[in-house]
Length: 178
Image 1: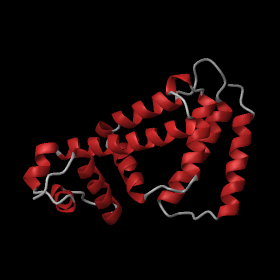
Image 2: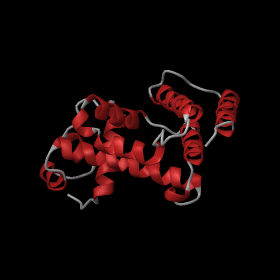
Image 3: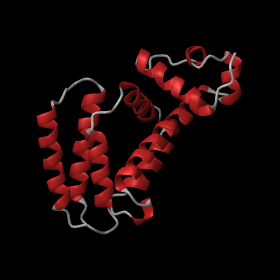
């Protein structure tokens, strides 16, 4: 057995989710992928829910890092428009995985796992605050739809159509009142 860091274990768990579509992600399947014993994995994650919450937080941390890089400034200094634009670029790059969608769907399916997602959404995309954010919400929802369609394999978007979609979404951001 080799020593694995928490991050390596969670990367292994994502590989398992990608491989099996999230069906019955088990201690054994993750331990095998991470080259650990089941007991070694349980040392890090005493319950399956603890492992799932950590996996959700792991995905969110990666997403936030990528979004932060696109925004190019501290979150507190960014506008909602800048954050939505960053999300459009993030979702529009087509770099989503089926496993990430499964992790998100598990949190939606099991509300006890949804806290990290809800915190992420409130932190990055707190729509409202007394101003009309309808155009930005529309763009954000469309970008999420693109992400879900590609992550689930429902839709494959070619480069020209992707560019046209991203341009159209950006025009709505530019027309927002924020």
